Length: 277
Image 1 (cartoon, rainbow, N blue to C red):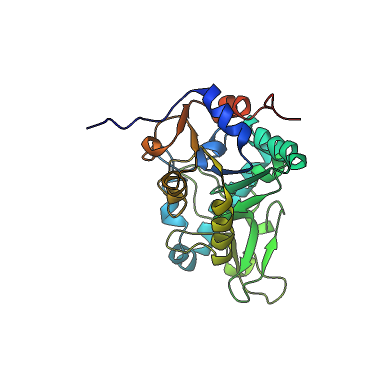
Image 2 (cartoon, rainbow, N blue to C red):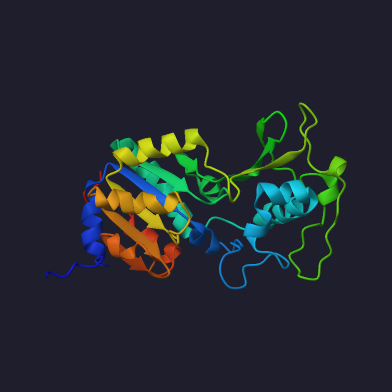
């Protein structure tokens, strides 16, 4: 029986595929944010206080203790003030800008909620899981951007990740509320147990249908449905290049695999090719 070839780590071969691609899709995950120092609450030591993210990022947790959940998200919002896009974010944004006059597109489909792609200058972004900086009313469902720091006075200096920190137990009437109807606001993010927004999924499917090169950057490929995107493209013959610190469950299905820091490898991988004008 013929052995199945594993992914290639030949950068020159990747560059030749890259030079011909017209519709590039970047699928990015938590590893990309981690390189900017953003807490990802994944794996060993990935706790906020004594909680795993899965214990807080659920509709049930929000109903049971909205103060605690808002402390968690307030901390995540505030910590972003000291974080910046890393060279991988910047390289993707520059790539989009550079290829646009050539009639070539770059679309970022991200599982991250920190808006670092946006801050780096990317414009074609699909946020699968929402954003830390948007709220949704639990009554009238209006979605609004919110960059206030803190989001409400009662959350000032609250949300410390220290395991010994006490819950603030903020009264509901002091938590973020809707300016339209007065209902309680929640973070506009997709929580565990919730389905992704249908419009977002439709838009993602359209982008993937036209994709002729996929860059899988800093994602462990375990959170669905996003984990299925790259393997689906690979099965359909679309070249997929994985950039990650380690191998993942889907590495064997990829055309290319480049191991190491995304911020070091990706900028070189997508720099201007000699066939570009």
